[in-house]
Length: 118
Image (cartoon, rainbow, N blue to C red; front, side, top):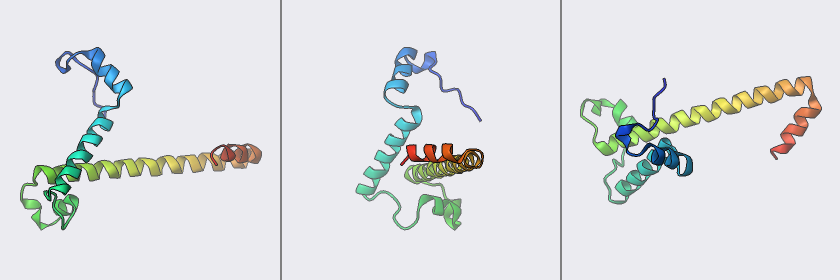
């Protein structure tokens, strides 16, 4: 799935949007910071559901009721965290396979490469 997130005329000044993405952070980074800040503030004022994670709540019998915006935010954060974790695991698996292939072909080169990351 791809989503066009390029700056368009309805988003303000395109040059500024591009500069912010390049110099400050991607939309994902910006949303991640905002989401974590909202979650932290909600926890400090006792507004987050303490007993269950929102993901567990959504899967439980209480799923028939509408989740609050904070619960939806918590579900969103958990889903993003799971996607990131799966991506990291996939990259690590690919790197291990590549290093194992290199080791079979050229053990010296694989040792040299592994030493670069120690």
